[in-house]
Structure formats: C-alpha cells, structure tokens
Length: 544
Image 1 (tube, one colour):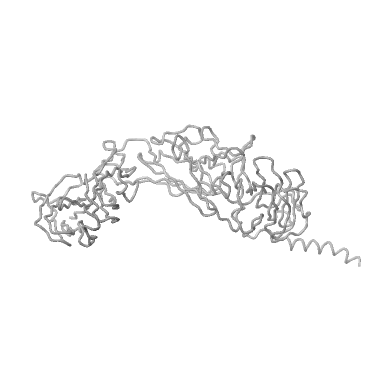
Image 2: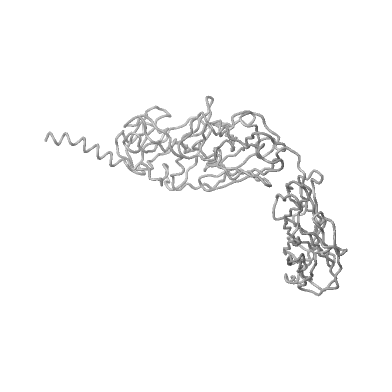
C-alpha cells in the first residue's frame, strides 16, 4: 500500500505532462464568444506604445470590448502554468505546456476574483477561464492576449512573446484595408537624411535617404488605429531600380524595445504617437536589410541616392494586413543633377472621327525621346474625361526611344467632344507636351455602328528586307489618302498623296527613301496617314 502512495504523485505528474502538451495548434478559436468571429483590436502586435515614459513595442494584441467586460475562454487545451493576482487590472493567466520553455497563451487583465482554475489544472479549448477586468480609461476593457513560451521553470515565472497571435486565429478576416495619410507638407511620403531629423526636398535628393510613410490599419474598431502587419517598398527608375523590399513584418519574436526608433520615426516633426488619445504611425520603410525583422543594424540602411543616376524615380509603398487586404501609394521624387531629355510628339492633334454613343475607339500616340537622357512622363491627363490614356506615368529610353501611349475615346451622348491630352515631363525645355483631341458622337438614329474591319485607321506595319515598309490601313469609304514619313528627329522626309482608295482594307509600300529618292539610314521612323480630315500614326523601323 505504501508503494502505491509513492507512485500516485508520479502518475499524476505524468498525466499533467501528457494532458498539457497540446499547447497551441495553429488554428485557434477566439477567446471571446462567438469563437468563430473576428473581434476588434485596440492594440496590435509590435505597435508603438508610449504613455509618458519610454517607447516600447506592444507584445500581444488587445481585444477590446467597449460596452463593458466580457467572459474570456481558453483558445487551446493545456495546463494552467502561471497566475498573477494584482487587482484591479493587472491579473492574468497563462495556459500551455507544464514545462520550462513550453508553448502557451497569456490572458492578461482578467479579474482575479473570477479565475476558474489553479496552477496545474487541466483546461480544454473554449473553457471559461475568467472575466475581463473593468478598465477605467476610454472604455478600453480588454484582454491582452499573447502567444508565449514560459520562462523561469515550471510553474512559469514569466514569459517571452514569440509570435503574432492574429496569425494563429481562425478566422482572422478584416474588412478594412490599411490607410495611407499625407506624411509631410501635403505629400504622401517624406524623405529624410538617414539617421537625422533633416527633411529633404523630394525634387532634389542627394546622399543617404530614409523614406517615411504615415499609415494605419483598423481591425473591427475604427476608433483604435493600429500599425499595418507588413510594409514593403520599391523604387522604379528609367534604368535603375530597387526591387520590392520587405521593410517590416510584425511576426515572430517581438524585437528589442531599443529598436523602436529604427522602424517608427520618433523625431519631430515626424513623431510617432501611440496612447489613448493619439495613434499616429510614421514608419521608416528603408531602415531594413530586407528580412522584415527589425534589428539595431537596420538603422544603417537607406536609399543611397549617390549610387543612382540623376533623374526621376517612383517610390511605391505597400501596406498589408493579416486579413489579406493590401493598399499601395506611390510618389514621384527626383535625384539631383542635370538631365537632357527631349520630348517629341509626332501628332499635335487627333480626330477620332464619328462614332455612335457608348462606342470606344483607341488611338496609339508615339511618345518619342530625342534626348541623351531618359525622358520621364510624370503624369498623363485629359481635360475631358471622355478621353483617357492607358497609363498615368512612364519612362521613355534615350536616343530616339519610343513608347506607344494608348489613348481611348469613350463616347457618351451625341455631340462634339474636345479635349487636350496633357503630358507633364522632365524635359526642361518642354515641361508640358499637349495633343488636341476631338471626337463626334452621332445620334444612333442617324448612323449604324461602324464595322471595325472597315473603320479608318492603320491596321499594321511591317518592315521588309532591304529597308522597305508595308503599311496596312483601312477606310470607311472611298477617299484620297495622304501619307507622310518623319525621321527620328521629327523632320518630315517624305509626303505622298495617293490616288483615291476604296472602302475597306488597303496597303501601301514605302521603299525607305526620302522625297529626293535618297536611301535613308536604319532607325525608327514615324508614319502619318490622313483621309477626310482624320489622321492616324504608327511607328516603324527601317532595317538595312
């Protein structure tokens, strides 16, 4: 009988070890009812916090219940490994594996008078463990919820935060995407000298540059702004770029608090705030080695603009949340130095002709750069929304580089439509290039929808061996046709008036010579077709 009494504690300990090993499963329910529904967050994992002392990272998530305290339930099977009795607000429970360094979950700000278990008790998933404490500030009644490993032997003396709890909750949906705010002086991003408080002019960048954005997310509770789960950035230039780089991902072990200012800007005027009254997150996306984890040495990283050519660059920052929502913003900036692009538009005007209501017609505008440096088309806009382009900005290579800009006329109600296509550029001699646009929408009772096969326009262009070019075009009705050829510098080298051509598909062959019959060199040339007051253009290449 004595031997049985000795064995009983051993058996009990083995039972505890076996029963408590479940820890976390990676697909936990929520600790509030309903268990299968996402609950609102008041603070996020890795969020900047400062309530009048030193800034620190929030090492869990705060599930807030603005209407008052609610019951809290275990998200996993396990053993009570730690209890803290510190009323009225700072009592808590840890449940996990009953061994030193075991996995588990922490539930903090539980009213200790409602504790249902003692250390060593087995707890099952969805068991009621206690009620959230009444919080005296801002109706911020909440459980501070952490994924942890225990420290200090068993029972656990304390814990280490090891991961973002939201990554383990099912479901973790979030209907609200992150939101970017203007960062400085009305601009969506700010540029600052690395590891200083000096704000830089984005139109004339030099040296080592930090890129800073102001951004936030919400999870269920719009009054409590949070930082996004992940931030990435990329920089696109005409010839040099920075690929998509992970600026920060709030996952894994919580970083050391001495790295807070590596990812969060804490210097005036870009000063992050995180308390009950203000949530403003200025985040430095370039302070990273690309692995997404915030480390002390990441402060040394920046955009080293001295290693890039002078000219325009587009910075894009993307924010993501765990629910799968993605938001992006972009901004133009310029590295200081002289550049010599030269914009040339072969067309000064384009008439889309007559179309029925709700009809779409597209025209290709060659945008040419005759300069020695890449041309930046900084914006493309139309004064009439009936006309639109297929891109908002782009680069054109140097030395007669060409980009085809697709311009569409979306016909509305009958009438004449007139507008101007405006291209802002980095060409110091022509910062604004324009094309006049026109289209006529006819009353459907007066005209049948045109047959696309017989519609006016250039259908194709093909380079021939020896330097010739075949031009394929079509006409809606029989008409005389004019063809003009322009060289890479925009000079007209040939103009021909063709005999009247019939409706439908037509062709014309150019032998690659100018008006005087001289053979022209290989290169890019521009073809302009005209008939009945309408024009169409195309780009071709002469090959010798």
